[in-house]
Length: 362
Ligand SMILES: Cc1cc2nc3c(=O)[nH]c(=O)nc-3n(C[C@H](O)[C@H](O)[C@H](O)COP(=O)(O)O)c2cc1C
Image (cartoon, rainbow, N blue to C red; front, side):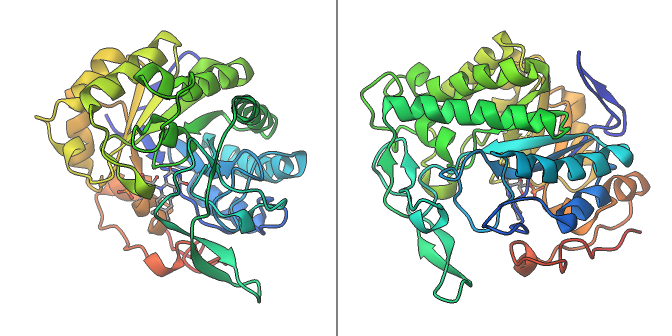
């Protein structure tokens, strides 16, 4: 099944292999415009049925890392247009992953020096990189966030919608809303971070209110079938605690997204164990509640493991992250069942072509 096409009301993907979103920090922080190197990186990987771009910040304040290409203005959209044209010319399809880092950020990353935006004032116990005195990236603790006001929350929703609109102008086939990995939308979900006592805190419906308002605003720009929503159940990344009620939380969201006829629910298993366990109850519960495309991600390397979850019906597509870094022709390698090249971790965020566009094809 992995090599079969996938179709919904709006899109046809040539196979069920998805390139997972991966931040690679190859833009210039000052303008955050995608450059020729970024075009080449994605062009090389266009045999994926669907590429999901690295997280693209929806505003200056949404940025949490140095040198991430973004999507909040027309210059950035023009840069992404070069990328989508190259991917389309090579026969691929591509979504932009629209992203707000929230408290996983530092004021030094924001042009106006604004504090990180938070669901609350609780800081993230994690680090990011900021420019040192010589402009070189230096690790530093994330900054003190400021809880978003109700008015600022409306602004964030508008930023996501504007970024989605720009994504369509830039020729993307759709967008993925980054609701995972401890970034802003996940911070609102997390009861250990979100201590609000307004309409955006407390009950599950309140903690998911921002995500669903973002989904609705984005849907008016791109249509529901061209949206993916990413979640990371059981995730601990960026200071999250494991959701206390995962069997309630994630199926609840799946049902809400299903009612809105959203095209894709993207599940990232950070620990790469439960998603491969046929006896684990979360994926079947998601399937019961979400009837469109479920993308499974985390630790997939072999065709057999992909076919197993597809055949169980617990997923429709499989996303690969690190294997796509070092195997630009991953689809062909899986098809031929040849060994995969190892990825080079030190060059993940290093800048430049090394470890980015210089991995050979077969
Ligand atoms: C270098 C790197 C950057 C990543 N950046 C993002 C990102 O921008 N957005 C996101 O949702 N996940 C991001 N991830 C997580 C991947 O999308 C994926 O879920 C993870 O690598 C697990 O899949 P794998 O086992 O196939 O690598 C990143 C992972 C890596 C290795």
